[in-house]
Image 1: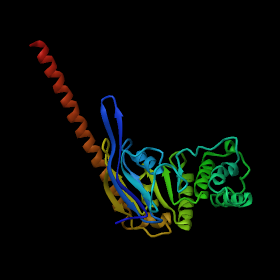
Image 2 (image 1 turned 90 degrees about the vertical axis):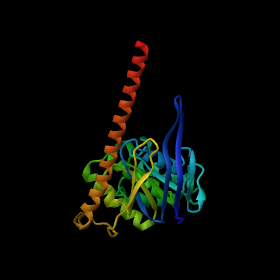
Image 3 (image 1 turned 45 degrees about the horizontal axis):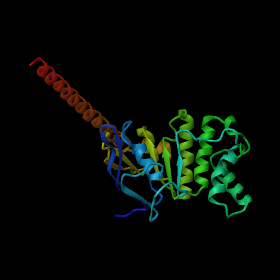
Image 4 (image 1 turned 180 degrees about the vertical axis):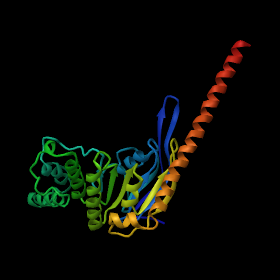
Length: 284
């Protein structure tokens, strides 16, 4: 069934000196408008590669991505991105950093309208009193708030989050998670997030997409998360199915660990056998 966002047979291959290296293969995912999906998997499994292909920042080798009936062919304002590090201009104020994108995307509206739009989203993330504060003078959590405000101010059709809370302390992380969900509920933005945190994925997501180990990583399982919205953290943690789903996600990851260990042992034995055969041939 077609979705608001469609990723079909998505693949990424790099040419190397030893031949083609397939990073992601046959990745398929459809998302409804306003849905929140998290990609979860071990480091190096291709999560960021998928996100960068959807963002248009990494060339797609196979398949394609459709957002709101438009097949992407590069980066565009229809997809907002928030990285683990907010990538701000440190000498600019919070307002100026948000306006960098807004001025580019909305050149046809008045300066006041662009200013008001930027101020609105900065206020939503709790920075209404820091509009004129330089980015270098903001804490790491506040800088990430600017990055979130900048992404939303562009009014994207899809939001892409690359471990947006990974560098924050636990209290700031929880606060920003709730702020982000509140804005997403209001603006109905379709969202894909990369995370290594099982509890974060469960709290934030409508679906959790589990990726297999690389190379040739793909979708290994998809879990529909049943918790009602708006999300209240205490209610989610007290939900009778919360720990069942948590166990399912952890078991999938553990199974991938087991498969990788078996693969590593097999490769080691194969190399060892090749070495013995080489020694035998030399002695003969």
